[in-house]
Length: 262
Image (cartoon, rainbow, N blue to C red):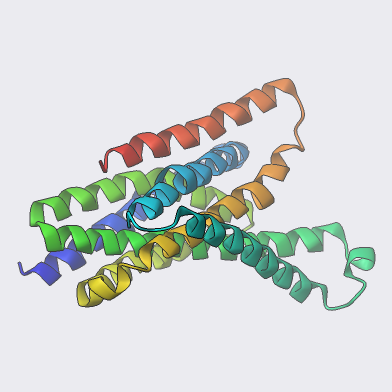
């Protein structure tokens, strides 16, 4: 196979295969899935924070030794503010009046919040997959064997994060089939990133740290603003312990999976 074929095949392996593996979650019996969904949300929080702080941001800061770390931090802060405003715009769009807070039922507000969460998680995941595609292409352009290993490692560390994404989408009221299709569509950003990198890797290399920082800010915002507050609805000691264990587990799995890339 020529280089471009290698890149196309293994960028699909790194993106779509991880989604299909994570979709096994959807095959669980409905009773088990419904009872386990709150726990998967706790796990998702850890996975998102782990991906942001242990994978995306460290990689962003190591991309260019001459890069000012303050610029990456500022990009993350601006990204969080932008996602806050984007979520506000989604909520305003569902209000249709200036009296939304006083006269709209709480479930309507929560519905708008859920839809904005879905948009943000898919956007952030798409950015992450896009950058994965760039990394896969760069590895193949260095060495075929390095490209294969990198692609398989990307698929491996994406699986726990995709499970978290499925949990978020299902928690937001999306059907199982639609959640699968949305995640598959998002995973195709890996192929897009790989092809774009193959065509113009030198021009894109300077943008990678900032793309990673924006993706990290979306994960941080969704985890802290949209998902974490819901955990406070259960205040029992046992439930709190379960939540902490699952959050730490999400972080730990991302750490272990990402370490396989190095």
